[in-house]
Length: 435
Image (cartoon, rainbow, N blue to C red; front, side, top):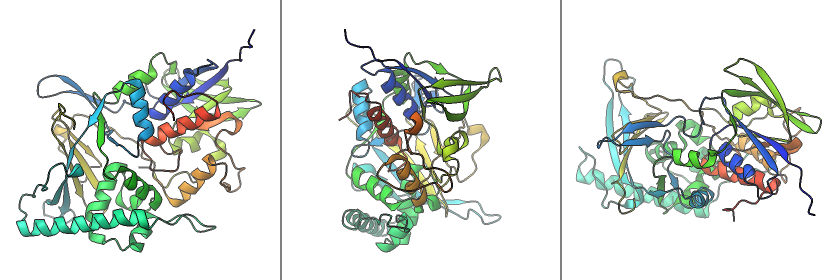
């Protein structure tokens, strides 16, 4: 008679994309070796918790993703394979990007003025491009030629001139340094490149300039010329698939993760009862942001994990994305097809009577230092330490990290899937859609 492997207990902290997909993978182990419990500090699962249900112009209910969850071929390959496995419907989405600048923003007694300098159609689906109102044919043509040359230059440089990697005591090159080294014009960087990348990363311009250059160049190279997609019906469809039958402890905020003998003790506070509870598990997987990891997991308390917090036929017509910038950040405004206007990082005040729903979310930023520390945690071939504390590697003591920031790349949904697949490999779990 074949021996039956003993079952192991697994706690997963967090129910974003990383937490839910990791929970699904572990629960569906082909050898049925794991009992999974999930802990969520909110009263609902967090992947879709910021989204909003609205009625469109026809009166039909529609789920609006907050933030928008567009993804592109080339970079999001693991995400696309997962969606295909679960039968998640997604379609090509065309976007129109008006680039605007806020003028007179800080001048007393003068109302801010918004000037649109160029309108870009994603993957040039509309050619020639739309001409901004108030722009002459000559100025528009000069701007279009200038942008074409600059974009061709940075694409060529990303292939030929690679960003400098860390070497000894020298950290990896920032995008600010890389842009200067390849002589990328400041006008193009400030008014076009930073706004479009800020829309992708939802972070301020200075923070983006301090990102590792390799992150931005790699993202650009992989998405160049590829289509963008959105999930039909929103990520609530994904959440429903991944969470079916899941054992979730809601209103349970993790406050400490530590090894106790051969086990891992998770301590959490129940916001409903007000009680603090603890339980021993064989494995604990933390699917939370770096600031939470540092707060609940002592071995990484001193680690510099972050740089800062902060269409196919039959599908709708192109959606408009307005990128309005000042000297420090870009306001990302999405004209959703449901007739809702979604604004991220607003620069100018919004009439409170026009606000239907407001949410706040944490954005994990990257720097060369946080990239170095992340590589030390997840890459066993990378040497380093965290100051006075003993170096901890992902999986030590059967404690794991997953999330959008838990890989060497842009902090986006693909990192959630890649880090979950890493845990699956370490636990010897076969993932049906993985290559």
